[in-house]
Amino acid sequence: MLLHGIFPPITTPFYPDGNVYFRKLESNVERYSRTPCAGIVVLGSTGEAILLSDQERHDVLKSAREAAAPNKVLVAGTGIESAIETLRLTEYAAELGYDIAMVRTPHYYKKQMQEANILAFYRTVADRSPLPVIIYNFPQATGYDIPAELVIELAEHPNLIGIKESSGEVEKVRKMVEGTRHIRHSATVTETFEAVTPRMLAASTGSSGGELVQVGAMTRADSMVSSKPSSSAITIATTARPCVSKGHTGRRIS
Image 1 (tube, rainbow, N blue to C red):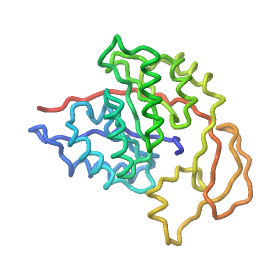
Image 2 (tube, rainbow, N blue to C red; image 1 turned 45 degrees about the horizontal axis):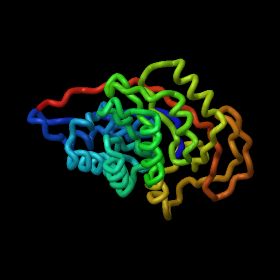
Image 3 (spheres, rainbow, N blue to C red; image 1 turned 30 degrees about the vertical axis):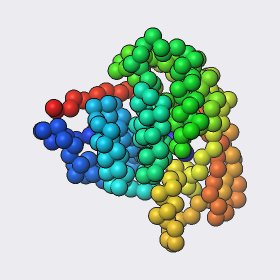
């Protein structure tokens, strides 16, 4: 899945009594779907996922998915302290039609956040996840900052495709970029190099709109060699690079 462009992390609206305001959530997603943003992040820190019940998380994912335009890449925040519970929520997101799982670092048992345990957690999730996975690092909220060396090692896993790095440490980002520059992932894109989602393909089946074309491989983000167009989906090789984002959290009314 191509990760390129702006992916706003949406809020989870609430009524004054603390219940989720689903109609407002749908309205917000519909509004974002009309913007040039590449995709939408649901159940991130801004979405206050950690304050929701299991049922509310499921309902929010379902509501946002149904309101989103088919051409928007949907990222589901599925990280929970347990790898098993993370996978359960990830599998549900996949069933709904989400494209990527964003998995925050486990953090509650600080003394257990050893390198071997973090590697085991993410490899277990990535091995079994039906969706490609991005790591979510937000040390200001979790109190745990995943080391750049671990990110570089995890980046070798074919189902770990990126990181949402919210620490704000530029030197750390530089180190991760340098350490993962050799890694390549493939992605299906449109003739204008926008991401192709399964929902987009389903919506375009039988339509007379645009088509996907075959192009050559991109060996670097800024270097491309084109090939003769065809009607098949295109595959490009892209450089794995971390994306930097400043995260924040709101407060749920209870």
